[in-house]
Length: 287
Ligand code: PLP
Picture: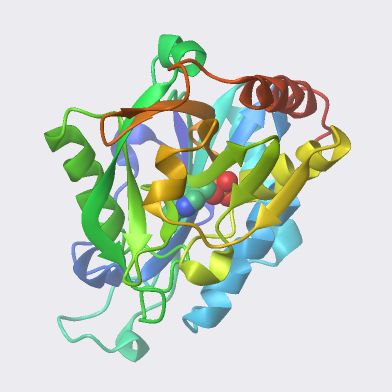
């Protein structure tokens, strides 16, 4: 595949960065995951805006305007002749020395990868996944503020390891106060008595673009959506649970910490939203 790297398109094997890059040495950098459906880049402007917000927050200068970056993403998709893809857009602090200071780094490195990705096997999108709550907690106030999509995803990696260790497909993270926050790379929704609940981002979740889309679709379908804190108990007794994210899309959860969610099958609200999401991802223009 053709990968965009610092101003040019190179073959996969030629896409290389320095071992002195602070993105690698210190996780000093930011990223976005973006999807392409039927040749259209979904919510591109929103993803680019979030990327530039992350960059601003960590004082990282990106050598392109937001419009130029949008065009580079589209060009990467075109060059690879992809109609369905997952795009990874990364900006690192760039090569420096072994000190932490970003000020000696020689400038941001930008790369864009477009590849096929299915987070879970198709069967699990129909039947639902199993999840456990993770022992790893999310601290919502430290520098790893989850609103910044930084390259420092160790918290999320540890959560994924916990899921694997427990024999589950995914893990749900709580914050240090015990409120449910999100999955390892997805936002979480629960349904109780036909009302949708999702944790407010201030609890320590990323403000997911898929989450915003699902909230919009839920409103269009006439559902009430409440952004309210809830606990593990509320997940156990929910009628429905599902996760949303660019990579995972919308995936039902049918078991949490060995508690079967309702009757163990994806519920009607989840199914209705999944269908609405499918329709809206397939009817968007490239912008
Ligand atoms: N939460 C985390 C920690 C993530 O990394 C992601 C993925 O980007 C999400 C949630 C879902 O966000 P989005 O729907 O914007 O992909």
